[in-house]
Amino acid sequence: MNADLRLTALRSLPEVENGADLAQLIVAAAAYEGFTWEPGVVVVAAQKIVSKAEGQVVDLASIDPSPKAREMARKLQKDASLVEVILRESRRVVRSERGVLVVETHHGWVCANAGVDQSNVPGENCATLLPRDPDASAARLLDRLRALDAPASGVVISDTFGRPWRNGLANVAIGVAGISPLEDYRGRRDRQGRLLKGTIVAVADEVAAAAELLMGKAEGVPVVMVAGLRSLGRDGVATDLIRPAAEDLFR
Amino acid sequence: MNADLRLTALRSLPEVENGADLAQLIVAAAAYEGFTWEPGVVVVAAQKIVSKAEGQVVDLASIDPSPKAREMARKLQKDASLVEVILRESRRVVRSERGVLVVETHHGWVCANAGVDQSNVPGENCATLLPRDPDASAARLLDRLRALDAPASGVVISDTFGRPWRNGLANVAIGVAGISPLEDYRGRRDRQGRLLKGTIVAVADEVAAAAELLMGKAEGVPVVMVAGLRSLGRDGVATDLIRPAAEDLFR
Image (cartoon, rainbow over all chains, first blue to last red; front, side, top):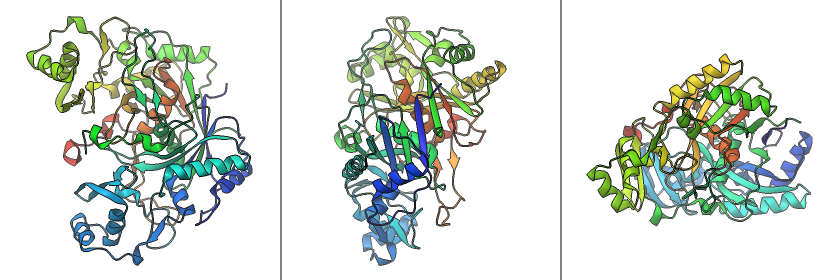
């Protein structure tokens, strides 16, 4: 009996460098590992490798922190150059206390440190930034996969975010192409025939979370193939997942 | 090539009634559907069926709402009996505005409506409550599965929660047995040998989210089998996922 949903880690991707053709690397790794493309495969790529391929990497040694960044860094006990980079990536600081810097990025994501991350980045003092436009990155990756005859249905670019109220981080989608990030059950009926109200599921976040189970943090599995997703919508972008500030009770 | 992580929906479970032996129903449905138990399977069960099996169902027609519940219901445009039940399930109201009632349950979960839910519940006016102690429910289910020779490694009881900042709901773990809900990467090193800091991943939430992709809301798939999880810790309870109020910047 075949499982309904099947996730496969790509383990043979090389270190990704600025300008790399990520789709080509994925197709080559998939072939090397004997992965069979079937209809409906969604490719989940970690933000880190997309950022590296796009050159979204900064050397913190090259940053001259502003007085504001220095002051904030002192209070948070963080590196001033890192705080400067985070502030440049942000349109608003949501919380800055107890060593935690939660911001709203220029894209609109609310997350710690604007997604600026120093783990798994080559170079003593380097950090990755989020892709400038992760939805565009996802769309380009999907187009290029298809151009290489890899019949992917969608691409999700994932990152690891914290959340209020619950311990631990979980992966979410920051870029989406080819699938709808939200599935809307409103208007459908439950098994008792009662109309379902208010139920919109963030399927792209759930796909990202599922893929993280194979990524780990230390293992270096930056791409996971997901097969067997129920037929999802084809439209939409990850920014659909951003709750407008006016509708958000917690900013 | 076998996928690394394999999720299988159980589709033949009957409607679950008060006092049902959920483990026995799961084992029977798994056998009927040809599911092969392999070492390491984690069983994800939706809160709804666990609550039904435990009789955690209320008839709203039997509830006499307090004046406080009536007033709150009027402002929120909700049913007063429903609000009364939600308040009884809560130790604190976190937000009550714009039609949204976010509370902290007696367990400590911060969620809308204290998890009280009217969908997929038989009976015109009935609603399910969360299990009284979902970790104990998970432990009992795991013990009983093993007693029936189903070699499950763990059980996750999942529910569908909203979250700040992001549109859409996602499934999270509210009960856990046999696996650690959090995976702690602190002290491990990334591929560059740099110490990973502050990275604790909420794997039980990610397992719940992954399983939701097969559950849907209308389809009535309340149990999903997850095979191929990397070796996870064996200890811990879902309440480990509750961020203490003192460490939470968003309550």
